[in-house]
Image 1 (cartoon, rainbow, N blue to C red):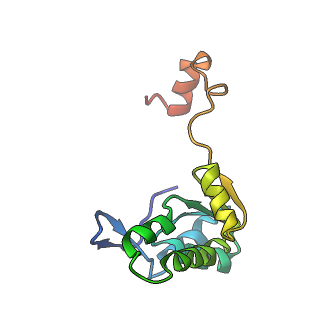
Image 2: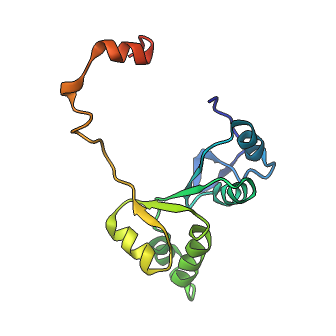
Length: 151
């Protein structure tokens, strides 16, 4: 598939990357064109709400991956506000209950997400299966064929 972009903006705390809310709904047109089997979105993130809308409207399964532990950030940056952790968990529950599956980074985070009312959570195992992808299986002819001669 070709890489296509939605219009973005620079957020002061992340000025090295472009962020998007896809207000022009360009993503919907892209998805109608390619008809994906699922939508994968990172949480938290600016594309979270558009992804939730597209998944619902187009009846496409929604996979969320949870990378930033929002309640800890709430404690650090918003600790002066009453109920900051409660709000963080409420927002996470609101978003992640719409996911068909949430993948997280560790069994400990999985347990905490489940304890706080987020359903359908599993651990996204990191790394490479060294049994299946062992260097002893290296075959240069297969690699050449699969990469069209590009390393």
